[in-house]
Image (cartoon, rainbow, N blue to C red):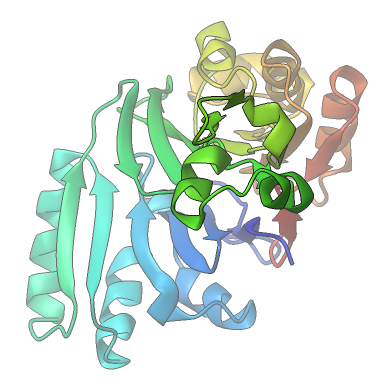
Length: 304
């Protein structure tokens, strides 16, 4: 099974339609769930995709437009009713933390979990880190302060070559350091280079989430080298002026970001409700960046 997956819970734009729900994704990283944006219907979508509330501890909000955060009060209330314990951290702007705190305190006074807020700003910054994963913010260019998120695996440990480790009698206490790249010095003072004792580590992967934004080359610079990029594609390329006026991008512009960022795969979403299907958007993107897929509710993408 994959250690790094993205679940699409909602990929529509501001107005929910009969085809799409507002923005919401859940990263499943080594059985730890982290939500990105929380549009209406997020908790129902989690149930449909069999994602457990008890595994969700971090929620990242890209900006304070309703289609990206109005699902939070209901989700947090339901998690309390399900007696979810531990800590739930919401990464959001200062205004968002104040508003969400007031709503939850009014409707959900008794909570078995601890609710925390990590205040973010539209800047390049590391906002979360554990032993295997880093989450970074970077500025986006919308009508309100907005950030994108990069989920980046840390470099993995090299694999021990068991035959060589046994040949040189490497003590168990030193093997973790050797997996991390150190050479081994024998009791006689001989230096055994690391490459003789190990084989290369598995590659590390990264996922960039580019929420609402006009086309801006700075976005490509921010996500340069990410393996998979999600980028909003609210409109087709014939509506490029409308997209700019409303603080959004076209599918072709999203594809250009992927090209400039040297990504391996592009996912487009945040579709305007005016489209009866996404084929025109996907065609616009694929002309520029062929390895593009159109997000859809219930879809799971393997990042690794």
